[in-house]
Image (cartoon, rainbow, N blue to C red; front, side, top):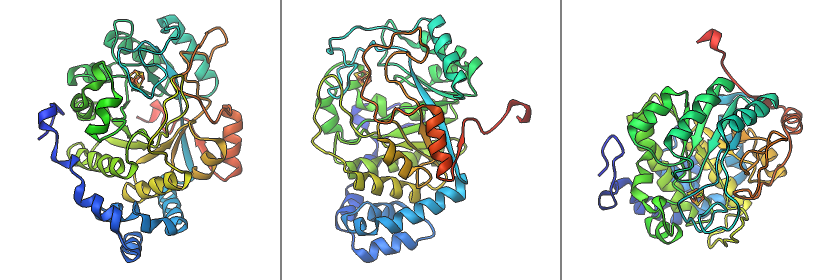
Amino acid sequence: MTTDQGQLTTDTLPAWLDVSALLALARAATAAEVEAALGAAHVGPREFAALLSPAAAPYLENMARAAQALTRRHFGRTITLYAPLYLSNFCSSGCAYCGFAADRNHPRRKLSFDEADTELAALKRMGIEEVLLLTGERTPQADFAYVCECVRRAATHMAMVTVETFPMTTAEYAELAAAGCTGVTLYQETYDAAVYAPLHRWGPKRDFAARLGAPARALAGGIRQCGFGALLGLADPIEDALRLYSHIAGLQKQFWRAGFSVSFPRLRPEAGGFQTDHPVSDALLAQLIFAFRLALPENHLALSTREPAKLRDGFAGVGISKMSVASLTTVGGYDHGAEGGVGQFAVNDSRGVADFCAALRAAGLEPVFKNWDAAYR
Ligand code: SF4
């Protein structure tokens, strides 16, 4: 069982991780069950499972139309934009699929506070108002105090400051929120504990349970938005989607005032040359996005620059409501004075802000950098 503060141990993993009944449905749903799910006023777990089934694949066009209609109803024609800023590539963990893993032989660096300010100012000049600050796992070089100070500085530049760093305690998340952090993104990578173990070869990230409980701790600590995702390609994507949905559905009941978002990161080439056993095709990616949109109509669904321009343009407004732009996965690099070095993974859509916004507008969509102003709070 889980406690309401997300304090999990490996011996007490939550019951919702058992999705065997839904998985059976997702493997064997009939066309009639898919049609019923598409026509349902409310898509719950059973309908969601049917929409993930092989029987739903021929209904992709119908799912796309329904996903677009729901996206438009809840988000209008807007696409919310953000940019990542890698603060540090020091890492104490050994994730087999990551270019920043501790055994990857490349120079390590972190941004000094002055460099972070310079990078944030460069992002601001690009028009960015929401920044996602990233580090590896907790290290002496990039520890909680470092992240907290970077958040504090980022909050003086940006309207929204989210972090994608390492699992923290509830007290640390509360301190982060007080420093100006509005959101935490923390992908479980895979919700399959048996697959998770060998992929996370050493370091604190080996602790599956500690990671699983982090979003609950963040929300209990006063963080307003939580971002979720599974790294597509690590494990069975349908199983991961069902568990991801269950994770969010449970937290939504407990933290009903919070915002939730789902990202769909597919594995990209990285310096270590990791090969996936579970490739996710474009069609399956589309099915996942549309199914999540139907099941979570009010939540942001995000797609990053891991995906190529053509695919991103196609999903914008069709399920997807939030996108990164002009991303670098090196440590810094937005300001010409900063030396980025090796990236965490290869970016696939390298368009700048102006080009990407022009593409959105050409498709009848409105790029949004900030949807509120302090004067109206
Ligand atoms: S995924 Fe994160 S924790 Fe794992 S090696 Fe990369 S930076 Fe470190």
